[in-house]
Structures are given as structure tokens and as C-alpha cells.
Length: 179
Figure 1: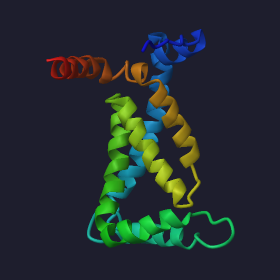
Figure 2 (figure 1 turned 90 degrees about the vertical axis):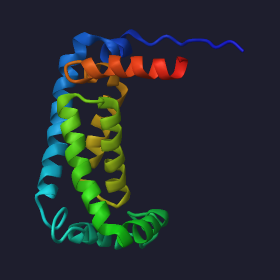
Figure 3 (figure 1 turned 45 degrees about the vertical axis):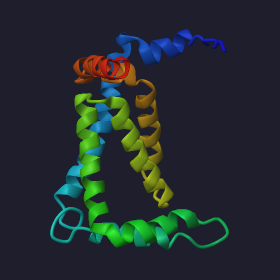
Figure 4 (figure 1 turned 180 degrees about the vertical axis):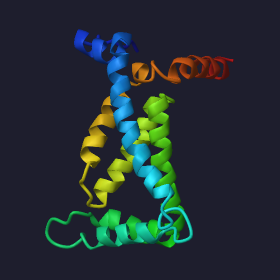
């Protein structure tokens, strides 16, 4: 079976693969990374998220989400409410730490340009979960910015640790897969 390659448009190549755009993606990365880091830092230093009362804040958040499950067009769908009731609430302290440190780590990784595509993916995953829990706030905006970083992963970390990490990772993976 032969496969055809569809060429990318010049605009797509310029935005997502041209190293001249690395400065633009650096600014985008720093903006989103700082916001994630700041949100995580606030939670890590809050005992209701990560400390003596860990899980208290998340319990309130989940209870608020569960209250949005009624009506003809609920903000929170039944299957996500099921997940919140059966997976999150019984382990709310663990989830609380995961949210707090997850936000902090995504922010730090984006700011230093470390595995930008993977970091953006995990940020988007958190945004998606917050939106599924009925919270809008900045989540749709951060999700779209994260998607843009995910698409531009090859150059989004070019001015950052990815400049050093990705070639080594590629060499390691090629060595492991191709023997």
C-alpha cells in the first residue's frame, strides 16, 4: 500500500515549524506557563489543597459541580458526575495534591520550554476536566492556547530546554526502536 503525503501550507509551515516564530511561541508559552504556575503555587501553598486540610477545597469544587447535574441541559453530564462521585470524592486528598502540583508542574515546564507538547497536553487535559465540571472562567482560553502550543510543539520550546532535550530524546528513542 502506498501513502501520499499532503504538503503543509506555507502559512502552516511558517507558524508551526519556522524557527523565526520561536520568539512568538516563547511569549505564548511564558504567558500560559506563568498563569498555570501561579494557579498551582496558590494551591500548593494553601492547606485546603495541599496540606493539613488537603481535599477541602476540591470537595467544595466537586460538590459545586455535582449541583450542576440537573435540568434538561445540565452543565455537568451524568457520566462526569459519576466519575466525580466514584473516583474523585473517595480519593479527594490524592486528587487535590494532583491538581495543585499538576498545575505547578505544567506551568514550570511551559515557562522553561521542557517537553512543551506534552506539558501543553496535560494543561489542556486539566482545562477539559475543569470545563466538564461546569467551570468556564479562563479554561476555554487556556485550552485554545494549549492547543496552539501543542500544534507548534516542534518550535514552541526551541528557545528553551526542548532545544537540548528533543534531539537527545529523539536519538534515545531511535536507538531503542531501531536497535
